[in-house]
Image 1 (cartoon, rainbow, N blue to C red):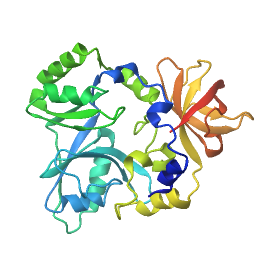
Image 2 (tube, one colour):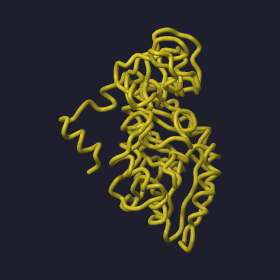
Image 3 (cartoon, one colour):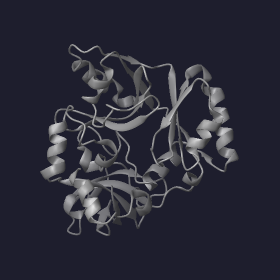
Length: 318
């Protein structure tokens, strides 16, 4: 059991993430969003399972066809190269990851294929959409497109589902899914509403809120994406050392913003003495909520800071 898990038990089950934040209203039904900026990497070969387990932070030793896990690809220094949803497809594994990280992940993976029977290929024939909300899984099953692969993906909700759709079937599948979501009172999300929703739900995004300078624990990703019982993987020593006896210098937090002042990615966060203590990474479209890195000493609910010179309060440590 990890130190964090032991702490949770000792504190008699503190509030879950979902209980600490105000979730977007569409999560009561479902929201549909096209993950246009994501790509799919196929990992196959007789040694695919054991080899892949040594390359990502979560455990795929015992997954079965149709099951999925959220994981990170990290480097030897323990910093995040990409976050991925890994689908066990029976004969192979399909990794859904940000397109911006695809080439880097592929190159790192290729470097560590030594004598194993493993091959990598871009599944460029597939497109990815996500359904998030209480009705997501049931709607995915109800609309079931025969050429699609659906798997659980808690991007904002435990019932969330990602769907991989063949390129030639995408338009028809999108129309079918859209109609089903709207019939249940759900929403079709554009980029702005998706970003607002994930910021409101306290879900950081790769390449925006965390990336190649980030340790998993700094962004609060260890509970969802890291197994501390799976055995060896690339970068494991650093991650485990941080978990067991390391001291983080910063943490990702959610801020409520009192005054609106044009916050953007990179806006400086300062303490009461005016000293720089971090920076904003994401801002909601109405400028009322932001995600930001701050020094560990200030990463406490209720702490007041300044963001771009305006008042802000730490609402949640992610």
